[in-house]
Length: 275
Image (cartoon, rainbow, N blue to C red; front, side, top):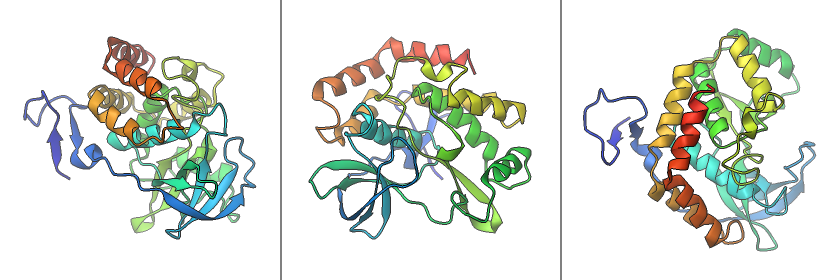
């Protein structure tokens, strides 16, 4: 994988972690809505997932709309997926979904080949084996550690075992993916520190990672530093893909201004002390 040197950085390959991002993580795709041809009511029992659709592209999607939560869930989902992509945290693919009503929704692709939902596997026992290292998962400690720092930055209060995906991969190994950022960022407020509260699901999961020695602080720090160097222009590009019903022009400008401000750096510095 080739690297791109971010503006203002030297080309010295020995520069500090977080100063270089993969070229692929700097790419912004054009979002063309996928028509929903069949709509299903979700029976998964989760508060923020009410609809699953089959798209015209033949894929199934877990769909989030502005009718869910406080209305900012689709914006939070898309932004967090794109931000995670830029700091190399794997997520499912996603698309804008055009519902039969004409409304544009966020759709996270329904992943095949995953452990989740397999009736032959006892999921709590599987998670215990993952934490003990009895199950081979590629880059597991790095994934857990970087995602924890990421969740703190986007103020995700709801990271729990049911919003990790475990997909089979080459050589009988598994790949971990993160999904469901419904209770993060714009939906709960991007500048608060709710995700650091000990009672949140995010912190309960972290305590398990820490006790099982699956947390590497250096990886968490590197993730925050990579978020630090993402430009406001890059963030503006992400927000430009939001349908107008997801976020007003005023709110977009307000967030871009915050991203450009010292307040964002102060937030990162404060989180560094909590890692």
